[in-house]
Amino acid sequence: MSEIIDSEDSGSRLMKAVQAIAIAPKDAKAIVDDYTEQARSKGKNATDDQIKLKVADKIISRYAKLAATSGGATALSGVIPGIGTAAAVLGGGSIDMALSIKFQVDMTMCLAFNFKNGLSDEDAVHMSYIIAISGALEKAGSAGATKIASKAGVNMVNNYLKGAALTTIKQLFKAIGINFARSSFTKAIPFGVGVVIGSAAGYGVTKFVGNQAREFFVIDAD
View (cartoon, rainbow, N blue to C red):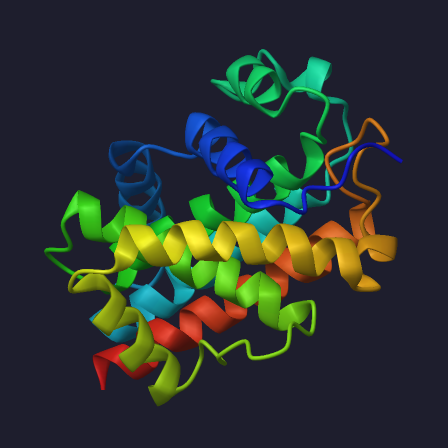
């Protein structure tokens, strides 16, 4: 098995790798706009809230399927911008973890723009990292992980966005490396074996994170 990310320095490299391949806010908005237009054309009498839920389901389904797709990093170099940079940043470490987090961050950013009107690009980026990684840690059974889809989770994220977002994101990247290395969750996702992530595990984890993120935004809107 390739080197498991389990130090603060490696957590920083993982963060840089994910940043190199994560979706840009404008591209996330374009996906949401396209899905919203499709949903409105099929449900002309649907309310705005109903449209948002339909779009959320399509977003989660999209990224769960992407996460379930097997393929080496080399094969993805022409599909995911920045993959070469991410691999170079990680060096001997696994690119697989960065790819799995990328799909979850991208999905969460799309969900953020879908549910929150007028959200700034900066807040969308920070919120996406915090929610996506927190959700993955919760799925991995990380001790002390806050349930994102709860009032406590909403309050936590909103408080972080007021000033400690970057510090929190750095801490989460360090935590996810350590927790994935120590927990049985690593056995479900074959990091470092030349694939993005195992099909069933990738689909399940991303679906879980997506559902938690969707509920987060529904609670946040109440």
